[in-house]
Image (cartoon, rainbow, N blue to C red; front, side, top):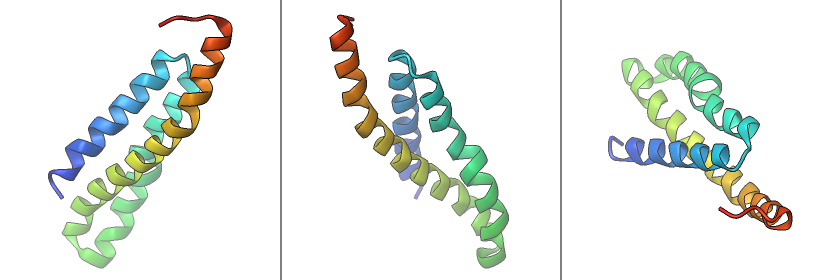
Length: 93
């Protein structure tokens, strides 16, 4: 699990960076919030009831992996639309 978390974090960081650079600040905020607020806190409260202390550690990895999947889905759906819009506006970049 330790090798998955840095990859997930890199994916989240890159997706959020691309979205900000493309002028989509609200989408970037939505990408940043799920990891810590929406996913990690509830998982850190619930998983220890089932797995004890290991549930806290698992919560971080599960939150990162889930957030990476969400970010990737958002990126795959929004990026082509953003590129088409920028192309119509004549923005080079």
